[in-house]
Length: 334
Image (tube, rainbow, N blue to C red; front, side, top):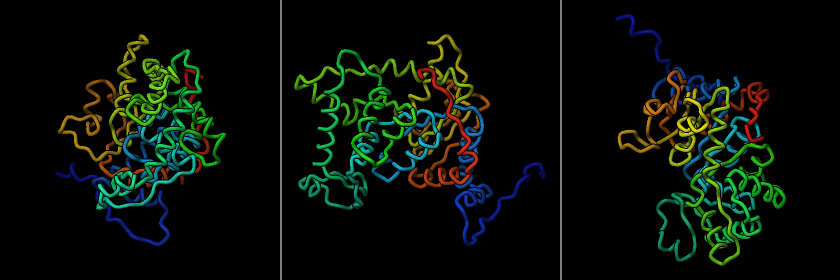
């Protein structure tokens, strides 16, 4: 009977002046998602201590919810090495980098009235449809100016766009920070976003023949994973970004390698695994596909990402030596 009683649960103490890192340390002594969050911080910290290439998958409306500067911090301080994102988050990032805003609203607003007023709602956030159209036109003009004589990887496209935004705005965003830091951004479902719509608008008017080489995106991200000494993943939500990163290990065969699996894995999700969807699937399930290594350090944090991510990144930021001394691995296409 005694074998079951190793470590007691520690009641969470309240004291004045508790730092975020101390908060997380105290959460480690508790249970449920508090303990999982603390485990997530520990696993991410382990990735930063070694020569681990860190993939980050970003889904959900994180930029409209106020998470843009967290992503900028992660990029600028080399806490991630490769970002795979929905096109929507990268569009919202462009919107804010060019000085536009998202505004606090309510989930109980009259959506028919909002539609008439050309206001778009994302749960309790609203934005101007006219400003979104303005940004759409900006992307169309930028895309029309690219050389249509060859296809672009999404990494190349977003690097060039980040450089253009940096010339136009002093506001730092995900795209501008990544272009400056040399952190690659991929968006495998780029057509399922305003970027796809904006490029299509130019194509329909005969202004460009821009094409994306998504197959090269697959090859490049596979190279990053295969050539890494070890790899780790951090997922906010699921969807295409999560699967695209997961498959980098499955695709090892195209380079003549056996899948090793990602050795570290942290995901923040509200989805459940029993419906069979990727966003809620467990890392244990991914081990059957050899996407995650058999010995991997892994945790799922079942939480709203707008709660968990600020706490996790703030706790890592307080580990100054860890953040300051981290060197980004050299990527194979550099």
